[in-house]
Length: 86
Image (cartoon, rainbow, N blue to C red; front, side, top):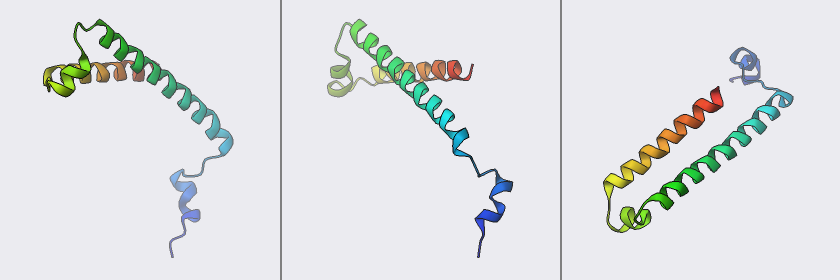
């Protein structure tokens, strides 16, 4: 039978909860900040656009606008990730 407890220390699988809680708290904070930045950026794009973004993408099947919105989301994600990493 396979004994995971015997090889776990060599694999680095044992983590103390005292060390895990601060990392989890920091992760939750950064996720919340990232989601707020995403929402703010998307709202700015929707407010600045002279047309209905939802109508253009959903009803008119405007693929070019969908690609631009996707590129915006990826760009903001890269900026947030590099800000978190320092």
